[in-house]
Length: 182
Image (cartoon, rainbow, N blue to C red):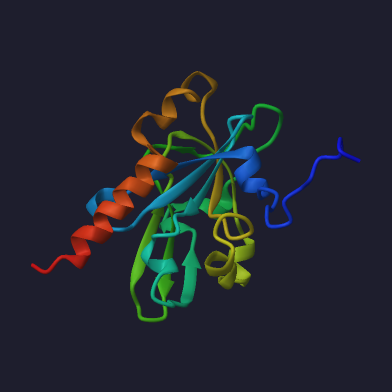
């Protein structure tokens, strides 16, 4: 009986996201304060674009009115079609390519950007029918898009991104700055 390992009943297993993905962050997108994005990078190079927990959409009890993947008259992310092993036909995105526009019920509009260079594999159409997924489960069912970086760029894409520790440090500095009177 002494050889049996005692398990802590309070300890919980890590989530699928925590176990298989590395979290990277892009803070204050295009100079807009607190508009933070989270990039979940899998070991197979796939990157899932989500909203960071600090994004204004996920704060202050906002509700989403609409999500629009129509970026311009000639460009809709919903028209993205990929095929084959090398994912031919996917739209190529730059670091600051807009993925979608999210409008809240208070008429505030936010643009979600790709944050990394790569080929757009899919956009999450389920958040069009159920925008609450974006608020309730932003890292799982409420993701925005899946992007595949070029193989030769897969190591360097994280150079302009913040690690989880760096992002948490930035957020704590932001909180301190906001709590001090001006």
